[in-house]
Amino acid sequence: MSHPGRLENKVAIITGGGLGLGEGIARKFVHEGAKVLLFEINAANGSKVASSLGSAHALAFEGDVTKLDHWQSAVQTCIEKLGGLDIVVNNAGVVHNAQASTEVPEAEYERIMKINVSPLYQSAKAVHPHFKKQGHGVFVNISSISAPRPRPNLVWYAGSKGAVSAVTKGLAAEFAKDGIRCNAICPVAADTGMMASVLGGTDTEEGRAVVMKGIPLGRVANAVDVGNAACFLASEEAGFITGIELPVDGGRALQ
Image 1 (tube, rainbow, N blue to C red):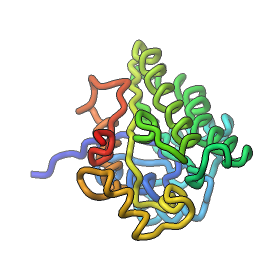
Image 2 (image 1 turned 90 degrees about the vertical axis):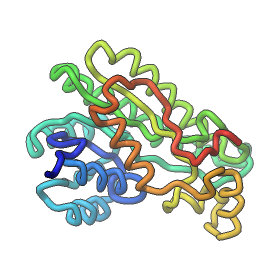
Image 3 (image 1 turned 120 degrees about the vertical axis):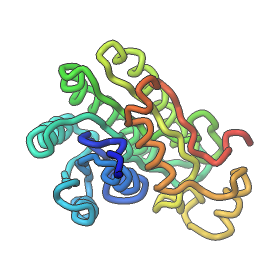
């Protein structure tokens, strides 16, 4: 006898769903019964993943997560084409090359803050009225283990993710009365295209070995790890959990 998925009949927006952790989250959500809208600035990436998941389960949406009108359009598209909206995963993000904090160009600092932090503001404005009206909804925001444990040379990235964690907790407290939960996931360095930047510009075996030495479970994170955590936090199993930062870090924060 087959059991319904953890996210059966749920509809989710996943930002940056066209590659990396976002793609892993989208695949897990669809596997667990959800329909997903892949909110992606790169239309080709979004379309590729949506096609592989099937039109009955996934829809690509080209948009910029820093723009309110794009968010409003994404919400409307979910309601009209997927039948509603229950979950928002703020996954899209960028990292700067690991380097001395005073050497990071100002334009890069501003890009990090804009892309990593402002989507939480825009998604709250665009989605909260819908969630409040229906009396339920979940935000899952992808932070980083560098938020609670910042390290040298990725300071501005850590600062942006510290903001993600603080905003998540603040909104959790504020939105709880409306039946809305907000949680953050804090992955360690993950096996995605961002690894090169984390290692200072080049993804090498030597560089990864240094990172892995600081992770007790002996490997970096991957898209499946983060997809599983996001699915749990978005599901009814986590119905009494709000305002947390969930480390998915192989024990990195213990070091």
